[in-house]
Structures are given as structure tokens and as C-alpha cells.
Length: 107
Image 1 (spheres, rainbow, N blue to C red):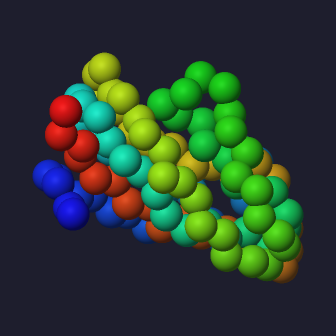
Image 2: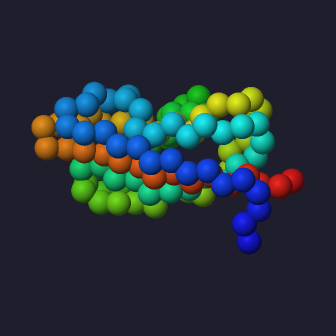
């Protein structure tokens, strides 16, 4: 059963982009959120979640494979973003993308 607000965002990065570049930054208001989605990078373990958590969480997948992520439960004490960045730079033949959904959770 769906609850309240649903938000989605898609992001992509092309060839020759450096590590730590944002692929998708999903803005979230204050509250509790369920976050999930799909990621893809042409290199293994190429993406990571860098916010709202202080420490990066590497999102595991195989090379040139699409992987499901989440659901994560995210408590936003202040408005901010759920951010996925490149963990591994893209090379001349590499790309990355992410599709992220967030659903407000009633409590």
C-alpha cells in the first residue's frame, strides 16, 4: 500500500567523468523516507551513496549490470538530498546511471 508523497529522479554520467561526481541527488524534505531504485555502471562497484549518511556506502553490482538497491529507511532531520555518486571514475567507454524513488513513510 502506498502511503504519502512519492518522489523519483533519474541521473546519468557519461564518458571520462571523475570519481565522486554526483550521478543523482534526490531532494528530500524533513521526515522519514523509504528509498529504493536501480543503478548501473560499466565497472563493478562503481556507485556509492554519500548522503545523508556521513560515511559512503558502496552499492555493489557487476560490471555492465543493472542492480536493484534498497529499500533504505532515511530519517531527514533537516531538508537535504539522498545522493549517489561515482565510486569509480568512468573511462573512455564507461557510463553510469541511477533511478531513485522515495516514498514518505507515515509514523
